[in-house]
Amino acid sequence: MSQWDHLWIHLDVASADPEVSEAYGLLRDHAIAIKDGRIAAVLPSDQADPHLAAQVHHGEGRLAVPGFTDCHTHLVFGGDRAWEFEERLRGTPYTEIAKRGGGILSTVKATRAASEDELVDLALPRAKALLAEGTTRLEIKSGYGLTLDDELKSLRAARRIGELLPVEISTTLLSAHAVPPEYKGRPDDYVAHVCEVILPAAAEAGLADAVDVFTEGIGFSLEQTRKVFEAAQAHGLAIKGHTEQLTNMGGTALAASMGALSADHLEYLDQAGVDAMAASGTVAALLPGAFYFLRETQKPPIQALRDAGVPMALATDFNPGTSPFASLRWMMSQACVMFGLTPEEAFLGVTRHGAAALGIADEGRIAAGCKAHFSLFDIAHPNLLAYQPGLPAPAVRIFRGEVVDA
Ligand code: NIG
Ligand code: FE
Image 1 (cartoon, helix red, strand yellow):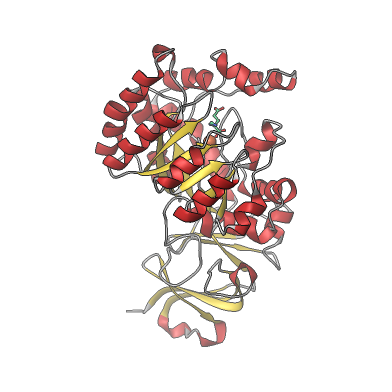
Image 2 (spheres, protein in one colour):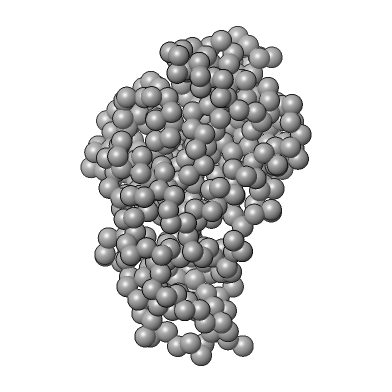
């Protein structure tokens, strides 16, 4: 029996491994050995004995890149919001549309009307577009159902994406996304329903890996957020937050003080919030697609996050209202041009730091012990990934050690 199932030789490897001192964790002319879907070794090509492997593949000098993690999406929903887009372009603010019962609630209506199968059919092409770029883990949130049945339906649809496509799925319960129409004017009653009914049922069914809250004037207060987070932790679920997207409410500091995996958006984050994140090790998930699509002008405090050593992840936030963009590569470009990330920070944002935002330690790097999720690109240097979104697509995608059919 062979020691390795596969051996890829003559690759340049952008490992994203912090143990490698080169930028991007770059290793020239290396080999990747795979056993049981995991990386067994990363070593110089001339030290990799091909006789130890059942199958040897010539890498042709291509660049191996860790499978990307898109750590924040709302991929499962019905309908679209193209008319709302037109309305916003004519000058009506996003918050105004939300207060009128449009926005998130219009997607809630369409999502409730869709069956689980229909939601899967709608989500599949979105997921395929993301996977074609080399993404191997997607986080998918509920939050457009807002009833017990519709939230569980959405989470089941999310899990099914992982059975139908070569991708790992992390699910997040975001029932505290908006107050549904049947609880209008009674947000505390809805929060109690989330904490006492929806969240325990999702946890019991094993349908949620984490719990998220939209802490915002048009979302939920700090006190309501705390209640949902406490319920999540009582059920052993990780927490993460939509915080400081439209105003500074202190949701990030609250989430960080409770040990959140990530706080996401962060345009209005202040220094106290940055310090709280640094103290707790909470990842900052930046979502430039929503910043762009809402024509936001307040940028997240990148330099303060950098100075404090807060890891920065990048995600698409794919959703019908604020970020209808199924491309992480494009988010990398936007984060560099609009937020001032370096191309290397953008790369780490969709690899190692993206995985960290979901609490996943054995993905997002090409290193011994990690899952063998990586792509091979015909590019000379990883800085091209952020520079030229879209092209080239990966020449080869490898998921759990095996080549994915195009
Ligand atoms: O991440 N901020 C709240 N949630 C989503 C948008 C939801 C929507 O408008 O449908 C976001 O931007
Ligand atoms: Fe979001």
